[in-house]
Amino acid sequence: MNKIVPSAVFASLLPGLLLWALPAMAQQSLQGSTVLQDAAYQDCLSLARRNPEEGFSQAQLWQATGGGLPAQHCAALALVELRHYGDAADRLEKLLPLAEKQAPHLTVALLDQAANAWLLAEQPQRAKQLLDIALKAAPETSDLLIDRALALAALNDYAAARRDLDVALRVDPTREDALALRAAARRQTGDMGGAMEDAETALAIQPRLPEALLERGILRLNRGDKAGARRDLIEVRMVAPDSPAAVSAGQYIEQMDVKQD
Image (tube, rainbow, N blue to C red; front, side):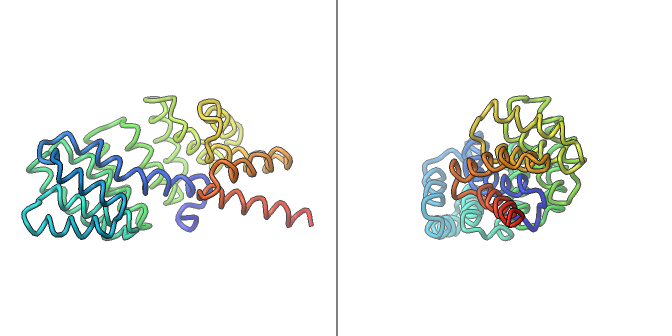
C-alpha cells in the first residue's frame, strides 16, 4: 500500500479500514432491503468471511439458481476477502443498475463499496469518481468523506483530503480515524502544529490507536524528539504487531538506528 499512498498513516489505514470493513458494511448497509434479508444471504456472507473460496463458490452456485442481487453481492465480497480487488470492484460497480431497480436506497452503499475495492485495487481515480457521485446523493456523510480523503491522498492531493476530513470531523468530531488521517494530511501540507493537535486529540479518544501513535511518532521524529518518537513507534508495534502501521513504525525505527550508527 505504501506505493499508492506516500503517507505512512494513510497507507496503514487503507487496508485496515477497507479490507475488513467492507463485509461488515455490507451487513450493516445492505440489510435495509427485503431483497437482501434472508437466511441464504446471511449464510453466504458468513461463509465468505470465514472461508472466502467456499463462499465465492456458494455464491456462484446460488447465482446460477436464481440468487439475483444477494448472490452477486456476496460473490463480490468474497472476492474482496480473496484480495481479487479489481474483479470485486468491477462486480460491485456492475451491480448498481440492478440495485437501482430493486433497492434504490442502497445505491450509495454500493458506490462506496465499489470505490473502496477500487482503492484496494490501486485505482484511486476511479474510486474518487464513484465517491463524488455518492457524495452528491448523500453530502456530508462522514464515511464517504473519509473514504474520498483516502482516494485523494492516494492521488497525492493532501489539501483536498484535508478539506474532506474537515467536513467529516465537523459532522462527527469523535472520529479518531479521521483525526489520524487529518494529522497525516496536515503534516503532508506543512501544518505540523495542526498535525500534532489532531494526533493528540485522536489519542485522547483512543489512547492506543496505532495510526495516531504512528503519526505522533513521525511528528516527534521530525521535531528532533527521538526518544519520544521511539516510544510511540515501539508502542505501535506492541499494540498492533501485525498491522501495516507496525510495518511503517519498524521502518522509521530502522532509519533512526541507521542514523545513530
